[in-house]
Length: 246
Image 1 (cartoon, rainbow, N blue to C red):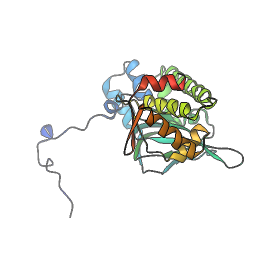
Image 2 (tube, one colour; image 1 turned 180 degrees about the vertical axis):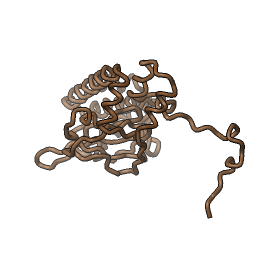
Image 3 (cartoon, helix red, strand yellow; image 1 turned 120 degrees about the horizontal axis):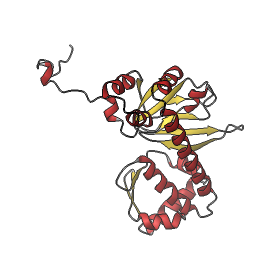
């Protein structure tokens, strides 16, 4: 038996209105580029609605390293981890993407995906084909500049990670990782959800899992963090920043 919505019998003007997709994506590079181009709301909505929506379950793969890059993805909600595999088959966590991030920019250049992408939590993404991306670039010329700015930001983050990895003290590496993850998540409260297994965090920091556990315990003993179930509360951001050398 088909369930009937309690609002279905209401006149159309009294039914709840679905929020336009563009209005829900305040951190999206593409949406913000369209806003700066002063596109009218109806055009923005039309362009956004032309992109497919996809929902990923935890641990579901979005794309594989080495596959032909046919689509660009904009993360709307949730988290996706990017994994690199070297020539020996060893995997390493490279980054975690949050709402507002773009993935698969290789599709704009007809290349292969340089990493694999897997959902950490239930995640929503907007999917645009290479042809759609090219059409957007024509419709919104300033999008090229926004994408270049976004790539520059990602390169700066990559350099920051490389600097972090040469830090000899494990607790300093972990402090830097916690701070970066919090800031990337765009969450106002200083906290980090531990949706990733410790082995992934250890992989990102080039440390053993046991070493990450000891480093976490040290930060906790110092009163700089507090662990509430699966959430790390950053109680002293200034101390963590100093410890991480940032």
